[in-house]
Length: 64
Image 1 (cartoon, rainbow, N blue to C red):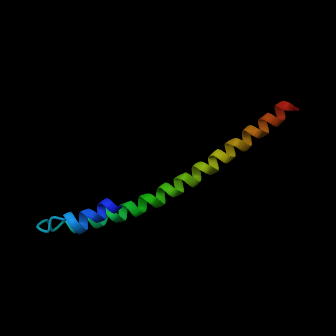
Image 2 (image 1 turned 180 degrees about the vertical axis):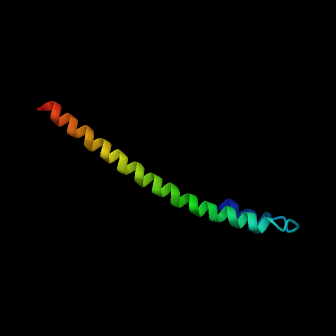
């Protein structure tokens, strides 16, 4: 995100009229990506916890 902002603030080609739009879209996409990555990590944690619980159940059944 910082690199995209630096591109916009310091390196934007003022002759390219699409640069602002493209960089704005890139920034918004980065925000969306962070949200999606956070959601994915939460779902992975839930899957890990469910798998661990299942394995604990199997272990307790086999131990009895």
